[in-house]
Image 1 (cartoon, rainbow, N blue to C red):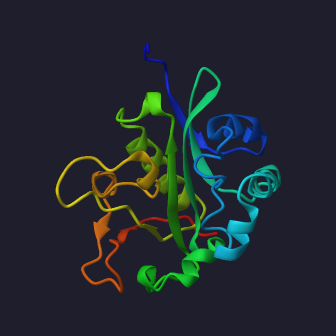
Image 2 (cartoon, rainbow, N blue to C red):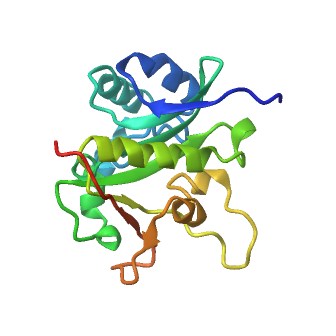
Amino acid sequence: MPRAAVEVRPLRVSDWARLEELFGARGACGGCWCMAWRLGRKDWEQGRGEENRRALKRLVERGAASGVLALANGHALGWCSVAPRADFVALATKRSLATDWDERTWSVTCFFVTKEWRKRGLGKRMLEEAVTLARRRGATRVEGYPAVPPKAGGELPGAFAWTGLPQVFERCGFERLAKTPGKRPIYVRALQGAARG
């Protein structure tokens, strides 16, 4: 595939068609439509597929979904979800992801990149833009909860890497918390000079 100029920018209310095309019939993965962290487990399960699609569409079109898109030739290649931690109600139920967050803490919860554009550095570019977006909107801290690669080595299948990979967060200046309530790593980046909301 020839290299195209890639733009990475915040999601706009006019971007629903691009996001819908990117996620495709499966809603990115298993009918999720990037709603897994935005809903309680029961509501998310019941909404798998069309209900989750409609829910995300409503959020996007009223400007309530926050994230960044990677685009080339007018088509979305990748998505990174970032928003105030309080927006992701499922995080409150995950004891393993409990932190000392406050109202100015933002969370990076999801990455989705088309197969053709994986391993081209889009994850890092989108995460950098996500941090910039969070800072502009008043965040003083950004958290991430990446998936752990297999201990035996080898690559983590894309379907299991949807929360990102540790090395991507590390390359963007995040630090792993030394003590966490569970086995899953939590990465944090404190933001200097964050805008006051």
